[in-house]
Length: 219
Image: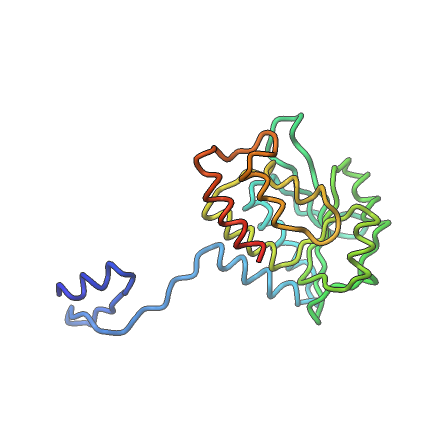
């Protein structure tokens, strides 16, 4: 019994049989809500037959990151509208287009940048973002830079969600990711750790920890 108690302190879980005896089988870790959301983002990003599935997952993702989100979709409108929870002079909004593809990567031919700009104007949004499985094609990255569009791959969203679990940021902290077009650079969040961003929500005591975490994310 003492042995079981000792090992349990190191993360081992033991099954209990019908007689109340502890077995030696290790239990599988239970998936958290964030784990399930990350899994759904990956699966939905490749389910091109059901584009609304990724739209819903993206809305949940940005809500988890602290934004006020609205799921829109439908013809002639953006998929998700995300508004930063901040005082009016610090607030900003983003129109988000979710692109699911059967082969994973999103190409330039799948994104209508002119329509995205119309969506931005319709909602008087500050920024435009596109979410997809990945954006490795050079042409789409170049066109995104030309049209001031931030590209969020699922890998980056996964890292942001995991970071949020360890160091809760607020939506205004993420603004820097939208200020630079093309594929997002998570390393930019290091400016929060250095105290070089105005109105950062992280206190000085937490910045060293944040800096270490962000360096690991950017790898």
